[in-house]
Every structure is written in structure tokens, then in C-alpha cells.
Image (tube, rainbow, N blue to C red):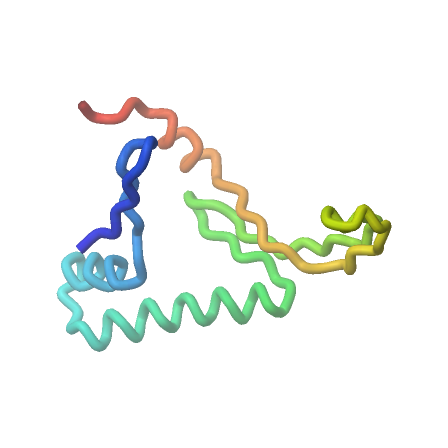
Length: 109
């Protein structure tokens, strides 16, 4: 069952790993265990590539890239004390033009 978030915004439905598995089963007719293994394997491969610093490019969807942020000066919001924030790696996603264009289509009423 889809996870829904209610509040002042319109209802949002979350695409979970379980929903991906169910969709794969319906589309391909694979048994539950095989569909789950396939999705788990795909996600694990993507995770390993990103951990190794590789870009994950899915044609027609977008690119996942790990970027390095350098150390920078900051301030403790509680004490106001100046400090150096350590560098870190962050994951970014850039959607493909096809995905961006498809998001601009009007929503069905």
C-alpha cells in the first residue's frame, strides 16, 4: 500500500522498494523472490559505484554524482564561536532532459 504524507500540501505518494518489486513482478511475471533479488542487486550495484566515486547514469532518467565539499569556515549557532566544518561527500542528482520535460506536463484532473 502506498505511503501517503498528509498536510497542507497535496497528498504525496512514496515509491518504496516494495512498490518497485511489485511493479517489476507485474510487468515481467517474475516470482517475488527473483524480483526482490533483482531490485536489491541493482540498488547494491548503484551504491557500490557511488561509494567508489563513479557516476551512475541512467539514460532517460538522470545522473547520480558524488561531489566532494571542501572544509569551510562556519559558526556554532548556539555559541557564535567560529569553527572549521570538515569536508564531506554529498550525493547529487541531475535529471535528464526527458525527465524534466515529462515533469512539466499538466497533471490529470
